[in-house]
Amino acid sequence: MKKLMILAALGTAALFTACGDDSSSSPSEGCDVTVNDNSVVVTTSLGGYSSTTTYTITEEGYTMKSEGDGYEPVETPVPTKVTIDDLKAMGDATCKAFEEAETVPAE
Image (cartoon, rainbow, N blue to C red; front, side, top):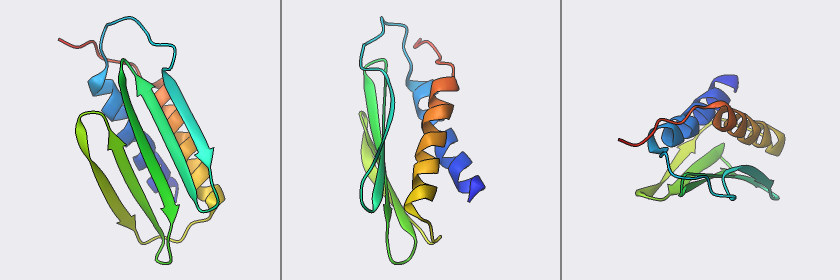
């Protein structure tokens, strides 16, 4: 499970490290985790770009759906049983990685 959390966190952090720009900061920049009945939504925003990753519990495990500015939505089934607390921990790890990542100025 820890490997999946690290993978999700690094994927999101990498997305925004590559997409960063050197324009002035927007007040809506950051990362937020929202917990629902059977899903966790992680919303990130940086440099005018935003993305949402939704982790939803299914009968087979969970799905991870990523949507954002500049790319088509991708939904990936993960055949690993999890709890809502596991998904929240994944979302929290994603935000921690996002907040600790350094941005790369656009060239």
